[in-house]
Length: 469
Image (cartoon, rainbow, N blue to C red; front, side):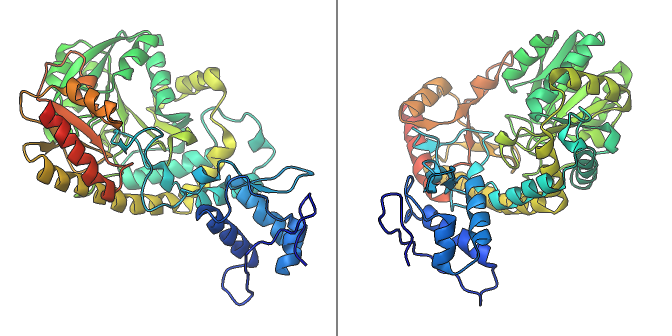
C-alpha cells in the first residue's frame, strides 16, 4: 500500500532495494535517495515518505529507514522535523555537489580563477561523516569537557606521525598544538613573540597583504623582505634587524618559487645567530605535481622554526582545523595563549579528524586531488600557450594557482578590473606587493575551482582582456 501524506494523498517513491546486492539495505536506501536528489528527480522542498511508510513500502525494518534518513539529514539532503513529513532540504542542490566532475564557480562569477581556493565540492563527505560518527560514538565524558587547550592527545599524536611521514617534520605529540586554522596560529605565535620582547617581524614581499595587519595587531612592526626567484632574501633579512620572520619556503605565496638549498642553509645560520624564530606557513606543500615536495624547513631547524599547517587547502576552510609544531621552550607559553584565546579548538571535530587521518582518508583524498589539480593546471598552461603565447608561467608545478607573467607594458589593474566587470575573478601581483619594486605584470590564476572544460573558454576571455588592455 503506498504511503499517504498529510493531505491524504498517496506518496509513491521510486526506490528499489535487493538483498542479493553486496551493499547493505541501509546503504542502498541512502544511495538511492541521494542519487535521486543529486540528479534532480527529488527537488528541494519535495515531501518524502515517513520512515514507517518507507519501511513498509520497501519491506525493510523501520530502523533501516530511520538510520538512512538520519544519515541523509546529516549530509544536508533531508530536513527532519518532529510531527512533520520529511522533506528534501532547500539547500540540497548545494549538497548535491559532493562528488561532481568539476567545481562550480562562486555565485555571480562566470569563471572563478581566484588563487588559494580549494575545490570544496570534492570534500569527502561520506568519509568525514563516518569519522564524525565514530568520534561521537567513542568520545568519553572527559572528551566532552574543555580538556587540554593544546588539543586532544590522539590528534596531536596522529599529526606528529603524519607530518613526520609526509613533510619531514620533527614532531613529538607534546609539541603539537591544534588551532582554528592558520590565521589563529599566526596570531597566537606573533602575540607571544611580542610579549617576549620581539619588536619587528619580517614578511615576504610580495606576500599575503593581510599578514601586515596581523603583525600590527600583535604589537609588532612588519618589515618587508624581498622575494626573488630563489625565495626570500636572507641577506635582506639579516639587514632588516628583525626578531622573527613569516615565510612560505616550500611554495612561496604568491610567486610560486621554492626557497633554494643555499638560502635554507643561510636562513638556518641566521636563525641560530640571531636567536630568532621563523613561522613556516606550509599552506599547500601537499600539492606538488612534477616531483616529490621539498621537506619542511622545520625538519632541519626544529628549535628555531614554528611549523604551521591546516586542513583549509587540503580539505575545506570550513573545518577551521590547523596545527602548530613548536620548539620545546615555547610549548607552555603557546598553550597558555591558546587557553586565553578560546579554551581550545572544537574537540569532536578534532577526534573526527584524528580518525580521518588515521584511517588513511586524508592520504586517499590528496592522491585523488593531486590528479584533478594537475589536470587543471596542465589545461591552464596549454590554454595559455595557445591563447596568450606571449605569457610565461613562472614558479614550480605545485599548489592551487599558476603565476602568469606578461610582457612589460600591460596594466595589471586595468586587466583585473575589466575581468571582474565581466564576472571573471583572479588576482594580480600588484595586490600582493607592499614595498617591493614593480615587476613584470603578473596574473595569479587559480585552477582548483575551474574544470578542464571551462579553462579554455576562461583563458580565451582573459587573453582578449589582456590584449585590449
